[in-house]
Amino acid sequence: MPLLCSTFTAPIGKINLIARDGILLSANLSTMAAAKRALDSEDRAMGFSEVKTIPQISDLLREYFAGDVSAINGIEVRQPGAQFSQAAWQAMRKIRPGKVLSYSELAERAGSFAAVRAAGSACAKNAIVLVVPCHRIVKTGGALGNYAYGVNTKEWLLRHEGAL
Figure 1 (cartoon, one colour):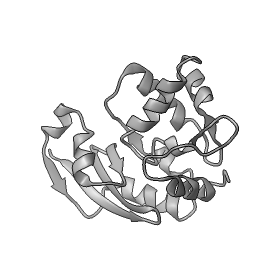
Figure 2: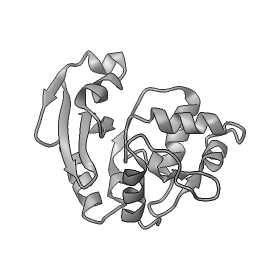
Figure 3: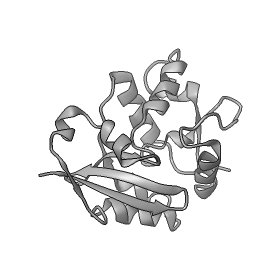
Figure 4: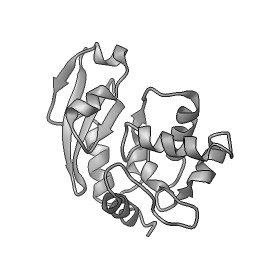
């Protein structure tokens, strides 16, 4: 069965989505080609089917942007990555909407207080924008820090969730 590909129009731009069996495998704000490149080779080998919406995932994203900022917690995710990145992504998913963590706090929650740079790298490599909420990671002291899709997008998301 091919992977489902869809583009979701959101206030922050078009989110390219790829899912398999109700599990979100990739989501970005750049291109569908980049979303496909983020997949592991086993998933890419499944082939792709373009669809208007992805059941449940598109609905939960719609609810999130309509104001139910916890709705995305109901989306199951999977992405390839090293052990520390996996731990960091799991820690990010535990950050409640309206809250932020520093990169050093994320490193500690992922298992290594000293791995601040690795925590930043996990944010940069995150292939599932929004649902694995790397936008909730900020610099020590509260400065927003970097974001792959621009600081304005990060700020919009944090305001939408009530963190700013």
